[in-house]
Image (cartoon, rainbow, N blue to C red; front, side):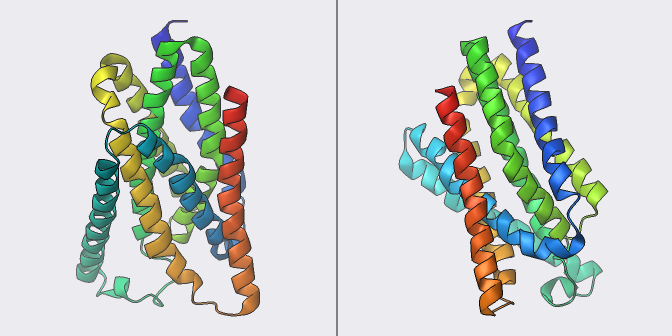
Length: 259
């Protein structure tokens, strides 16, 4: 099979398989579990941002300050984007979006943001897959498998956030599946214009990390503070730690296996 064929197959299957495997768990979870499992999603988001995306962004960049500025700009940009969503709800829903107790979800705000960040992440994964296959088929296969393994715990977190944000299970699955095709777009563009795209990788990684940090810290963590009892706090803390640990373990073992 040609290099382009390998890139196409790996990027499409990589995105689809990670979403399907994650859906087997996330979409079968009972509705009552979702608020508790949001804690796991917070850990997975922060783990992916700080243990995987940001180290790659800083290591591959010629300027640490440029990456840091991109993260800051990304967080500010997502703040403005969320304000625009709130403004829209103020006009069509009589400002219910500002009332944190008006409903059990957040009118899709965190879900929309995580889909944007996940698309950036998938696009960048496609670029990395293409670069690896253009180096060697073996390296490309190892990289694609590592990305699939890395994506599964993060996709579980994304599904949980979408459910928490008020999306139906079917809509959450379809939107995550559509987002996964950004991996194919990144791989295809990288194959035809790899040299010009390489300089964009660190910026894309930084923006993806910014979206994950913003959603976890600004949208999800405040909801955990509504339950102040010791048992709930311990449960939330353990699940956040589990989310971080799952990202670390997958990253650690796939790097050892690949390297």
